[in-house]
Length: 80
Image 1 (tube, helix red, strand yellow):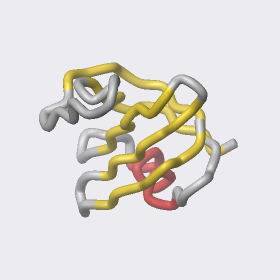
Image 2: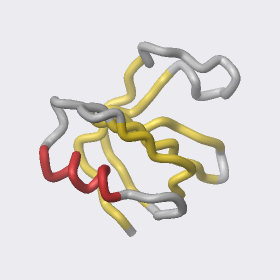
Image 3: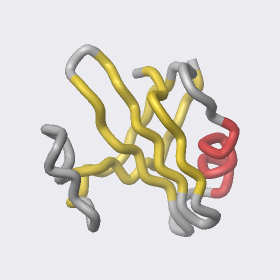
Image 4: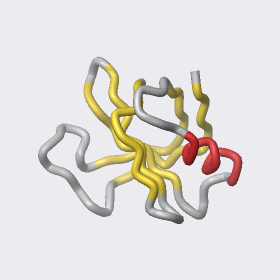
């Protein structure tokens, strides 16, 4: 999908990834592989990404979007 927005909170990075089905949040934290975390840090708006990880329940839910209760804990990230 395409990067809608990237939020860098220091030890946490969130990327809102959009495709034709909507938006899903990708999550990167201190448990993320350092190379993957650094790649996420370099991402900017409209980059095209492929990510792989584990779907988990979001700690802070956003009920305004259909995918607002889940996020993807990313273990593999490719910039396309």
